[in-house]
View (cartoon, rainbow, N blue to C red):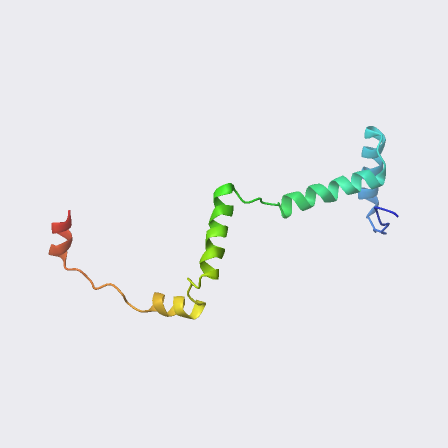
Length: 98
């Protein structure tokens, strides 16, 4: 069973010339160079980020809370954020807190 598939790609003559030049200098095939170029492109444009131990622990805690029913819906959150919950304090109350 093959582990690769063949595709056809159209390239402008200048790019093909550079591909062949680099291949000759590095003793590599066109396929090797194109595979490496695509691999580099994907890693730069779409990097794979792995969660840290702390992030994984947070995800586990969050999932456990959901299983216990300890969550709010998006609508409930939006309602809570939209309603003014805190009363405005007077300036003198702020100065006393300092």
